[in-house]
Length: 291
Image (cartoon, rainbow, N blue to C red; front, side, top):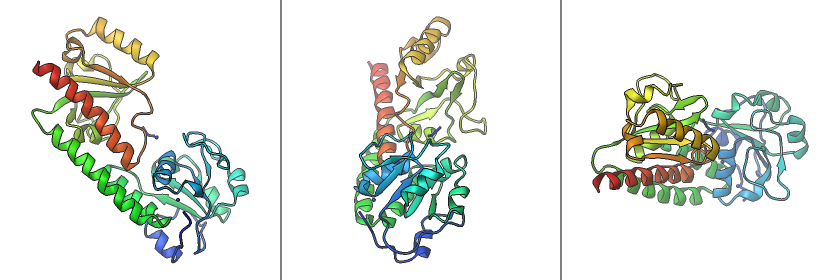
């Protein structure tokens, strides 16, 4: 799962920058201004834009939804084009631990370009820490702190609303072909928890276990959420209606499809928006049940 995220700033020293990022190789950025950034993570790109620092972006991947004149596409998320990155002469190449495992960032570092790896985003707290680190790096600390206060307030409001009554059992599928569920140990599972739900699939020891349609009979969730396009979602919902009509979620009409790009980004704003989306679905189910 994933994955789907700066004005010029004086960097006091490279050592200070590395307090916020773990080095990905031998490449280094000389102390000075960051004027050009290549982002190899759509989530970091979105955070840069959220920090009102988009003018620093020199390159992004084809997986990014950010498109502006002068911002080059430097390949795909899993296969960045190193030659194109070098030609852009960035001051720093940013990537996340989630994505860097498949991007061969060591090759980029060996070119002498500065590289910076942001820590894995395990939950909302981790996302906020990375966001603040990025804000400091690009001279947007005050902007980051202000935004984080607002995001935390919004998430606290969502969590308080979700605390009312019994937690709704949610079977959340990040894929329907094959059928892959979100467990409480997953990033999506934490969003579900903050939205007032509880993952129907747990105890597998895996964040996103591969499950069978028949396993739904044992889970019997209150609510089923499928992250898929309209075509796949429609087929899946028809199969559920025809073969698993006794399930609580099916009998109550509590099956919801959300677009694939709803919850893939590791940014504070996207996390809060995702929690609100799921909380709204949970509230609609509760209101229906109360009626």
